[in-house]
Length: 180
Image (cartoon, rainbow, N blue to C red; front, side, top):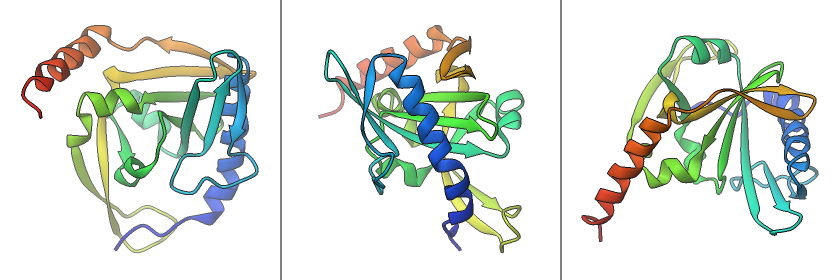
């Protein structure tokens, strides 16, 4: 059984996450390009455009009930595999109260072939539904930006492990020689 769409959670968290991401990127010189009033179904949640360079950034958001567990106990962050079909560059994992988030650079993960780390999880504690199975991608927390959020500003609380990031870059670069 696949997980059914939860319109209640979507309505409760999606717009507030979008509004906060817009505020964060506006503080960094971007303007909303699309995504607040219209639904960008299967593309991303928000598209921002830099005011000077015209660089486009696509963001996907998700609030997590178990954010503190992910932050304090797990070595990876799960991203639902269905999110691979989006065009997002960044994936924000939000604490429900939006005081903290984890940011994953999806382009970097694609480059490093992280998406081969797939795990299947049987979920049983979700809105009193029957158990269902969902596939996730395991992103090592060493590749994740851990942040606090204060009045629309991101404060990086724990830098990524750049030694690990460089290791993935080297592996990725070595792999380019063997891939067609």
